[in-house]
Amino acid sequence: MSTGATEQEFRFRDIWLVAYGPSIVSAIGHGAIMPVLALRARDLGADVSTAAFIVALTGVGMLLASLPAGALVARIGERRALVAAGFVDAGAMALAALTDSVLGLSVGVLLSGVCWSLFLIARQGFMIDVVPVTHRARAMSLLGGSYRIGVLIGPLMGAGLIRLTDLTSVFWLGAVMSVLASLLAATMPDLGEEQRAHARSAGHLGVWTVIAAHRRVLATLGSAVVILGMSRSLRLSLLPLWADHIGLSASTTSLIFAGAAALDVAFMWPGGWLMDTRGRMVVAVPVVLSMAVACLLLPLATSALGVALVMALIAAGNGLSSGIVMTLGADASPDEGRSQFLGAWRLCGDIGNTGGPLLVGAVAAVAPLATACLVVGALGVAGTGWVGHWTRRVDRDRVAVVSRR
Image (cartoon, rainbow, N blue to C red):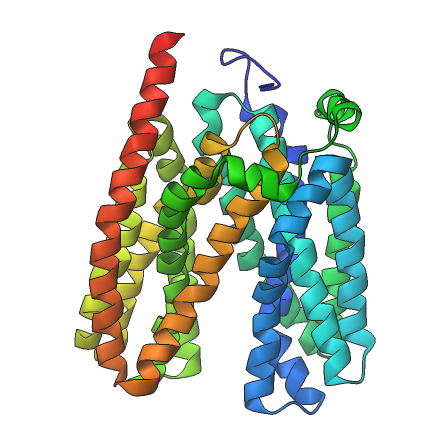
């Protein structure tokens, strides 16, 4: 496997622009759009449930595109995939700005989700090539953190634009950011051309062939990733519902989330360092356990301070876990059929991200919200053991590989 530099030669500052620039820029656009997407749907005449469905279409697009995106990256390479994803995403956002129908907006949002999945898989593949294994977790943690930074900046820029113009200007901002991300991605080296040329002559591996060959890893470690994804997604569904349940205002809830986001960013580098130096399990277990404990404590949080403390616990765990799904995917990925494998790996994470809010909604539909918190917390405690078991095996295998060098 090519790493682009030896362990002694590698410096993050040598790759920061091509490695993280496209992610930050693209995330600014997505971050600006996320808070106003439901409002745009409402402006076009959608009712509340339809607007909520449109917001969810980004995740649906990512879920549907995971496997095809992996196959496409394997054929055209990471650089071309990133450039194409950015330009198509810009078109999707322009459609969302120009359309006068809910259907048009839905198509734009779904297509944007598809592009984002392609973008993430291509970024992960490039980082596997360019970063030595000894620095992998820190590199992936920064990659995950670059998205968080963009999501912090994006809403601020979007709010300023809305004050000066109107709601659709935010979607134009997203389109411009996607084009800029494409232009930045075009400057990165194409590290996999030789391997793709060999694959073309020998015949590209099919997605299902790769999945079948690695089905045990996907069923075991992949299921741990599903649990990680579910745990991390709960903060976006359960916490706002509880804040509303105890009567906190939207502005107070937003301030709590902003503070948690800052804490999240602060913990991303320590999390990457811990994964590189102490192993993946030392971060994976606290992520799931912190969410489980937070869910169990949430029914006791009856004030803004209580909710903020619970959210701080979640943010610390989530910040430590920045990049962990990508790191575990990089650890498990094969040299042959890597992009196809990463597509399947992305699907595991997307299932978890989608499943968390669905689980909360299902339990809350038949029981009080406090009961939903306790049920999800208990499941998280059980999931902690499963995640710990399989990530410990990853650490053991990594130690064995290093000892054989």
